[in-house]
Length: 185
Length: 185
DNA sequence: GTCTATATACTGATAGAC
DNA sequence: GTCTATCAGTATATAGAC
Image 1 (cartoon, rainbow over the protein chains, first blue to last red):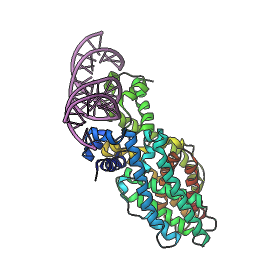
Image 2 (image 1 turned 180 degrees about the vertical axis):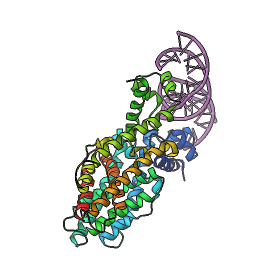
Image 3 (image 1 turned 120 degrees about the vertical axis):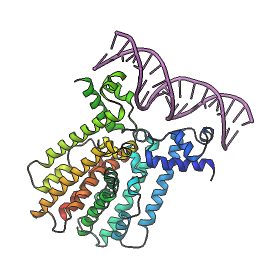
Image 4 (image 1 turned 135 degrees about the vertical axis):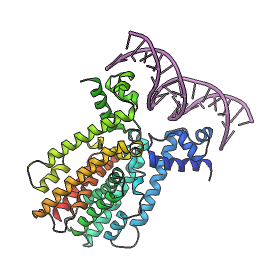
């Protein structure tokens, strides 16, 4: 793996665990085993490298999610698979956590991949819900747009509750609560 | 207002907007119009002052929430009032955002008020749901613990989606989705 | 209680040698 | 491409005068 690639991957990990404000160039260089000079040769600075890493994290998250949502099954099965997907719950969401970072939110360029990822997810979930509703899997009164937002929020909020508790349990409970209501509605 | 009080209130605001990692003693002093010496006279350092500010933010959030949940009305009305409560959506949650801060999560002392606040909220919501269920307001199959976690998660995740979008809309949609399912279940 | 001086380490970068 | 040197500014304090 070349140096530029190691720098991007190291930054992906550090942004996931510490956010943008909490990640220094020095920490990135150390993690990537690259020198100061290498980093500034391949990237113009911290924002440039962070942007590459955020985009990569977004692409990877989207690909992993799409693999689950496009698998065989009913809409209800896909939604359930998405909610019960294998996750490092206590680590949080590599994309959602950046929505709490003041410098990411202050930069249109850094915020864009975050915004687009959630727009994509919302669109994907709401299409799926509409198809399931069409096939009679869900209540006739179900609002796909609202329920899609609710499902995305439950996952993001589940991470927050779990981290606050130091336990995966609140995440699992929140998912259960959402799925119970959706499937019994 | 005395200096110690100004320092605490300034730190409350800065932690809300920038988190612990993103807030420096210098920024606090400037916001509170207090000198370096004053800050270190009243508090032993940044963690000590932050702890006071986090506890204060937790107390205030809890008091505001309790006022809504203990008002007159059915369980469903109280839950709806809680979800539709006046919020600075794009600013995020003054407590939940700290669950994404690496240094707060690394310190048992700083994390404790965050953990306790969500434990209190979960307990309060789940009691309310159980009472409502008892009175026939909700489905017989409703699981109060799971739905309470789901509701807390929707609020926290709603903040994340709204900040990512730069718009309050996703928050409102997520709340609508949760409430629709709860009340039609 | 508040102020100024001082201190060590880190942040985020630039410059130029190799 | 990578390395070392250097830099202005900040982070997080401590010490001692007033």
